[in-house]
Length: 188
Image (tube, rainbow, N blue to C red):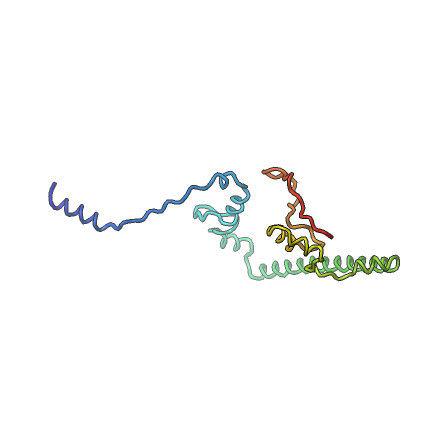
């Protein structure tokens, strides 16, 4: 081997910097068999930025200028469409406001009838209650609870649906029903 080849090989070896290779852990079995909704949502929110096709979420559309010019050829047509859309939204808003006012009037009539029929129930229905206030029995019971149970009791707002319950769905859970689940006992 000639000395010039050896020198050029040495020079190349000395010139290349040492590269630190980082190896990451493979995804766990739980991640691979987990809920597919996470992957679907990720794909919808962050589609691949391929430049060879248009994406349905609109991240890249090469034909958007041409499509707009073809659909709305003039500024006047665009402004007319905008005004019609705003008028449509105003009609929907007015219909919702009218429906809300009608429901409020019905509720007001029902409360007036309740006041005439049973003033005690009327007072109970209109009682203002601090949702953060705790009864003395609850405070005593919380002293003996675990920290996790105590946090759950503190986070719960009286009169609202319990946060720790699952939302009812049309399909059963992949993991099945939790038969051992029990509500936190709260003295009243």
